Image 1 (cartoon, rainbow, N blue to C red):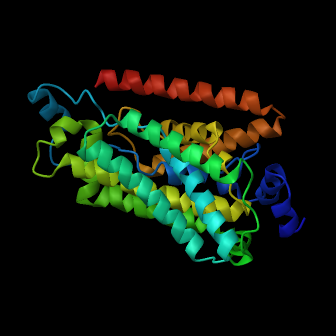
Image 2 (cartoon, rainbow, N blue to C red; image 1 turned 90 degrees about the vertical axis):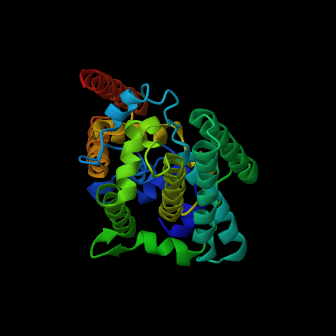
Length: 323
């Protein structure tokens, strides 16, 4: 099958064309699906625990009257952010045939959404769930309205071809995922900002009583989330040779949560490592491939992964209570 045939075909045909990747980032079946390494990119902004962060945020929270009852939780809006940014960039490239401006448009769009969420949550102290849910609805609706629920194809070959080329036998997407993962690990483990991000995840109220402002840390985390969503939009568009509003399917959100909780990232915040999300993504990929090899239907596949999430979240809950 040629690239032009894949662009003219259905999302299922395009997805089957790009499925044979290295096992590190094997795709699951289903239209609009995306690899679990995409989930790593979309979730590298999670707040995890960093040992020896300079103070005990839980202790300080107790001293100041308990933890923050408005913990900075948000739905995986990065998935919808990536889909919306991919649509904008693909439409721009289809109209101008500019392979450079399209990726830049994706990054700028994703950063704008992340910045809006960060300012609303970090500085205006709006409820994270409400802000991100509203923005997710707006972005998804805008993507559907712009595309009329039709995939955007006819993307310049200069943009698509590098994603179909193997460098030293490895696809470009793997190099990008590895580079982003390394940078995220360095940011979270070796910088002052990473320590404060962990502190905010443990106890935002106690962290904001320190000289550094917790609001700025929270706002910047949303900006980083937007940046990663923009990178994911570029990877999705390049590997599928198209963009559509259904890139952010509910199963993608399930992949995101699965990779994180299996990798030891606490849903309560402040605990976890970037490499844990990577290992969790690899485990969920192997599980999904095994279920597909056993000819298990996609619905049963989703049920199994959902059950795994419940088990690991329950374990995380009882572990947190034990502390």
